Amino acid sequence: MTPDIHVKRVYDPASPDDGQRILVDRLWPRGLSREKAALTAWDKEIAPSTDLRQWFAHDPAKWGEFISRYRTELAANTQAVDELLARAREGCVTLLFGARDTQHNEAIVLADWLRSHLSRTK
Image (cartoon, rainbow, N blue to C red; front, side, top):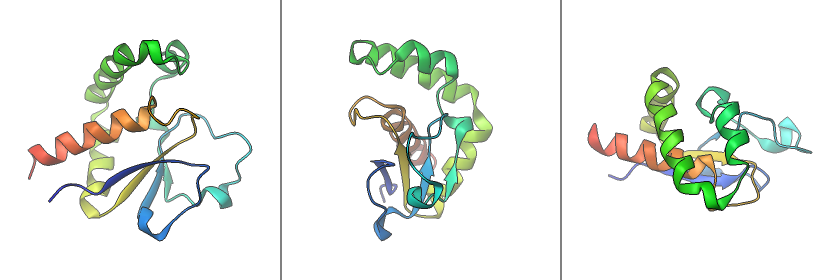
């Protein structure tokens, strides 16, 4: 069975299909109330480091290198990764991000990372 991990902008309306809604940004999204975000959790610890986030600056030209650097950070962040893997094993998880770019953001990388780790630990 494929892990049920979704990726969604935190500004998009919550849905019952979202399951656990986990914000994976280091900074709180601008102009969004906690009520409207409807989060299960805000996991700042699994977000890219401040240095990596500032270096990337949502520049698609840096995307390949961002993926590599963020995966290195994830490999070193075993506690946060293990906690999120445990949530994913419980059921549907939606990773939420605030960026406008829906193709180049940390939630995409994180979802792929989690799926690959879950498929290896069946």
